[in-house]
Length: 385
Image (tube, rainbow, N blue to C red; front, side):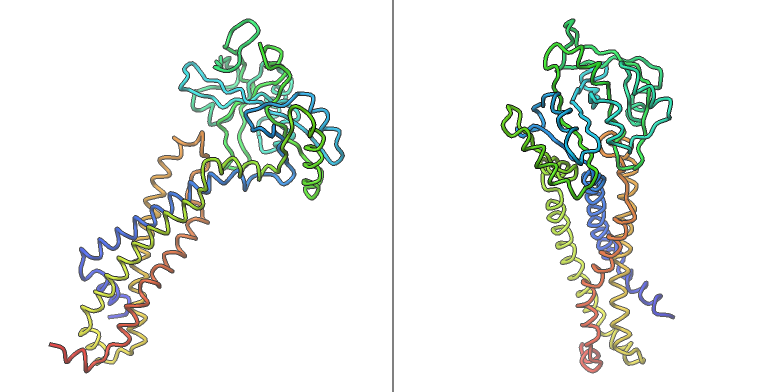
């Protein structure tokens, strides 16, 4: 009988205890994988942010607009390669509950600012030239069964047209995909000029500017120059890198990373205590058995190693089951949450981190019982009644 067979038999010698310990570890790693995957998606915008992109918005907040004239003035700054703008249109399709994330943009400069948008050349040309064109993401198109050539109405509870109507008609002329899976394809984009000319109020205003620089090393200098240019205006600006802007937006939701540390730390602390205590009890119950093994010639280091491997195996069984269950749950949730959280999967990075934690968890919980087994004295153990 080899060591692995002995380890396996000892691990499940009391099936109920082994099952309960496995379930405890499963729950801990299930929580870790689920929250870790959500945290990765929430922070994907920061990781995907281009180094050469700046965001300029009203310093009173992104709910306040900027004069359209700022666009041309920013374009004249040395070191600026491209400037675009975007304005929140909002809108919904058929019913108020069917919200469509829609933005009014300048097609040519916006696609130049975001090369991550992928679409056939003929559809790109249509978006650039057709004023009533609506560019929709693949996820959004699948959600409502839209295809190129469809004419759809979007209703707005914010923006009215000069004729008093809140219904805006568009031709879907292009459907975009993304060059990276974490990028959302659940939004729609319309031609700013078409939108601006029909507005009943707030004309010649934009939500924010997207600035591409020639050299990311000059970002701070260009950002300071933009903000200084409008420092004495009625609409002062706040310019930051796209990564900083995205991180600030995420922070409004809360410090997800800190919440993750607290939840995972609490879960693993409790499980560590439970598993560690249970293993100490299990080794204590096997004191005479360990003494017999030493009598038969099993050296103390070998027994130490067997007990430690037993703890690691228990952690791996429960941990891998927890990661597997989380993977199935996320696979089911991904299509439902694709519009808001694209790329919701268990990545190799998360799996690798979980695997390392399983091994570390097993070593930490097993080191104490293994030391106790190593120190068992044959005379004392066999002398117990």
